[in-house]
Image (tube, rainbow, N blue to C red; front, side):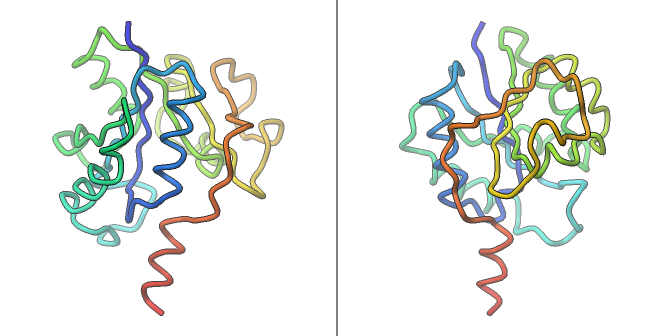
Length: 172
């Protein structure tokens, strides 16, 4: 059974932090592959704030093309919108029953994980790798407690960049 990491996001735009983390995850975890799932419509982000999905997908493909076992995925493009992670994971299990999926998220998302649709389902059926971000909360301060399948990637390098920062700089 292949262990597949699911690193979802808007990637609006993709940047060296996404790419660096993807490479680090492949080098320092037990995952066989990492799929960067480009989200066509994140329910936690304002509608209309995203670049066209095909452009974001193409940019992610180009950004990870030289990293072994990392690929861009448009899997969510054919699913109902907005994209809820629990639904995506269910569909991935249906389409790829031979794989074991691990969710890769940032600590900013872990801080609000209890607001995600069906977060209990995700916690009970999937491992979660959490990328710590500088200045964010720790596991002990999380809104979700007693999560056995959650692993903080404590030794991952800190990438001081975000898509939000990039978009803001482009507007200046």
